[in-house]
Length: 162
Image (tube, rainbow, N blue to C red):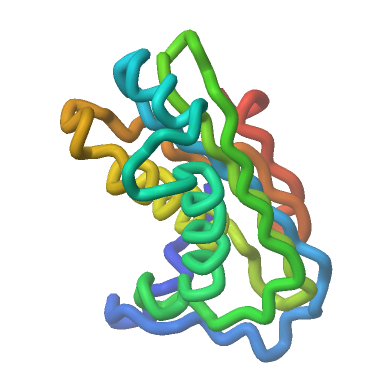
């Protein structure tokens, strides 16, 4: 745990961290989230029969777009020139539902954890939106950072920290 909260100034007021003197390094982050649904809803998505169209393709695109706009959604986040955003969606029969992951990369002075978390959150919300007419009881669960690399604090892996 760091010694203090970097987004607070000496008086306790929120401020944007000055990254001017931080070196630009390759930084990556990966996050995940799940949408738990009825087995029939999962089958509807798998078969491509959702009335609103391609659920997985739309969720993937929404996640990518969200990552690029994180600084507009989360106060004090820096706008970043992202070099990679990848959103994946796979069936998980044990839920039942979909497990979504987002990987984000940048060459810059600050990390991309918030971009990865935003991407996966919006992708999950998009899945919900596209099939809510048939399954309003869906749950979005387990949104978390899986891993990050780069920067002064180094690497983080969720499995090692839990």
